[in-house]
Length: 230
Image (cartoon, rainbow, N blue to C red):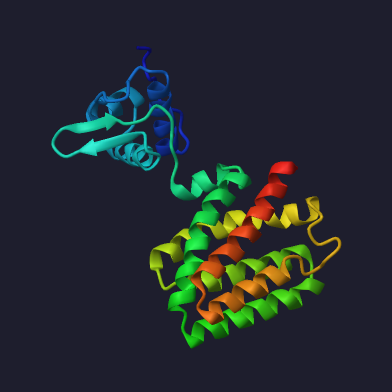
């Protein structure tokens, strides 16, 4: 194995993590194998043990290594896997939409059964805000649309679904602001999709879980299909 070599003065933790990652990716420390101890790594890199410790913590966050109490640090992947938010940012929007559909359709079904009067008030207000945003720019319209979907998910009263959608929302906004113009979604109708969203809200009001899920699934699938056609 080639020597790691001393590091140049600069952000040492980032350099140390990058150098160790290079060795793992190159196969010098294979998946399942144990890394040298902190003392040995610090000596080879020419840094203190605290720097090595922080570098290993960063690599653990990237899913590449794992510390095992009393045994040392082991390689778990030869490429950084990233966290959930990072994966979402890198994913194709069509793939995000597939997962979004699974999350939101079930949330809509639950919301139809669990919604309170306060939830219905919030959803009605969000639908009205979405309609009003029809005269605004694309970014404002997308924000209003996402706010309505957020209100529907919140009406399901499931904190895990809330957290999942909160992870999707920034990715959706980033892409949809650009794609609304690219796909011409509002060229003929500034309030694109209003009828479907109004039908969804009405299904929630009736407590009709099946219809709520059906309406939302159809609306999301229509957008996903247009993404695939671009």
